[in-house]
Image (cartoon, rainbow, N blue to C red; front, side, top):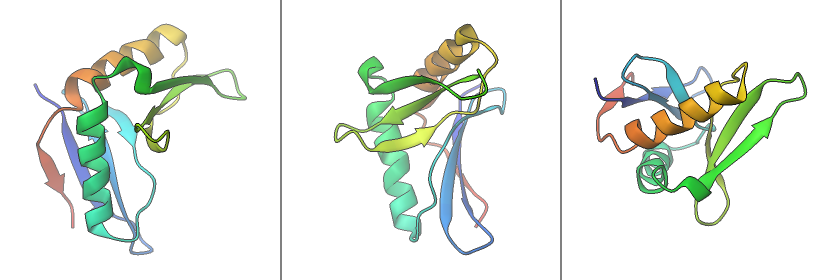
Length: 110
């Protein structure tokens, strides 16, 4: 099954998106945006940048878990992954993000 984006509104009226894999697992979450159009532009940026391995910043958190940031060409963070227990799990999530990030399916909860 293909991945998709969920576009939603937070309790304070801001917008965000989440990239879901084919198994419904969250792969990437965005920052909060003041405008819906900005969140939609963020989705377009993921679609454009997700296939490029150089756009992934692989990180280790202070608690010893692993995550990644997907960055645009201007080095701005587009989205951040959840925490993973191992490097292998994080790297598998990057591969899944590459595969599912190109999806043009957006499910809105607005």
